[in-house]
Image (cartoon, rainbow, N blue to C red; front, side, top):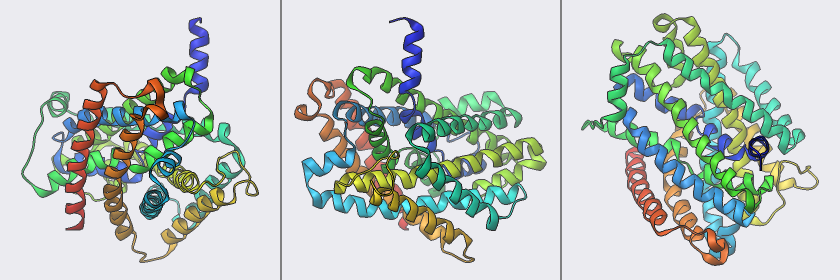
Length: 407
């Protein structure tokens, strides 16, 4: 096969891996990275290296299952471990993903207000727009729009250079691990990993690969799609931390939300940097508001054996599109209610995601090593050592994150 045909084939297959990984930089993820840079400068940059390795390992396994089996992760868990286990996971996932969706609409509202627009106008417009896109667009249209929107994340790279960081300090922070015996430092270290590897990602990636119909012979190209996506998402996270570390940390500016970082950048790094940061926050929030409810609909419908797919109509897949619609409408309405417990919902979301992640990963590794399911595509021994080591580390960090969040 010629190089031109290989590139054309990759472009046809490309999508699920890049979109899944990049959408993980949603409003909650951007907030985590912004706070890490503002509060601790470059000290937490090194955590992104093991996080990227862990993300690639987990996503590659899940993506491989989607290609080889043609089924979603919920499907495989229900078929091999029964309806009870699946039902419990779905209940927790729905609640956790709803909190994440609320957080993304909150990020969209905050970014719009920074740009001088009313949230009471822009939240309904955003909600209606993404609902129409998914319910009327079809898989190919939705995927192309999401891939284009992923390019906007590189605005964070631009804002990072505009912040004029000390590159020697950046290099040291990235390569020399530093640990401070402070509760906030430990919590942010865990949060960086926790916001990068989430339960919904595993379900969405495998479900979207199955929905796209990627075949076994294209597995290597699908794996490349996953690796590129994981690499890009953590490069973006790197520059979000760098931007806030270079501008906010030297002045001791403490923030609690990404929107506060965008607002503070104006007088320190220039209005253009502030505008780019706010625009990228709006982009990430809106993409998260599209994908997280979509991932939830995929998970629940796979688990229950209901018809699902972006290409389906309401008549063909009423549960799938009903769940998607319900999550968007209720989350958007909550943002418009003064005094709504948004912080509580987002914290609850983090705790539930932390509780669910170990179970999802254990199921995924068990399934990917089942020769009846995967045939010759099971993990090698070396790959199992790496994947189980990653999971054990993630479980320890997740348990710590849950305990800290509850306290």
